[in-house]
Image (cartoon, rainbow, N blue to C red; front, side, top):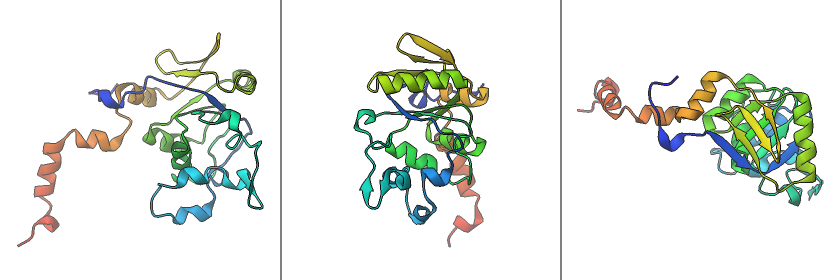
Length: 206
């Protein structure tokens, strides 16, 4: 467990409606095509999430879950196995975050992708295939209904149903203690930062 708690960063649960995306092996190039890696900032990444699937011949595909109006505003993505495989580009989780995704429930993750998500505050948890299927069915029938990803109880709750979820314990504790953001942790030690800065020779000007 972390030695300290950063209250403003604590994420004990994520509540929101769902977006179903159940295919297996969705890779980072599917999520954010390589041509968008040249962007200097991540500011526009949300517009590019699944862009090659969502737009064909210049026209939006209305049935794609990221375009479908019934899933608009969804913040909990429900995915299949090996989600986020492929390259380790951080543009993929940035695109999802800026699209509005705050939690992903999948059968399994590519570990680097899951780590990149956690560094942004996106909660990635795994669930059994049968529970993923039940969630997909629920969201398709109740697109505006709220889902709760509860890290305290390690459950995902939807309507009267609940299912167990798994997440690396160290990562779970980082969310519960608010220590998932490395920059926030660094900023807690301002005196230490100041001392290091004062002793860096290349920052001393005559």
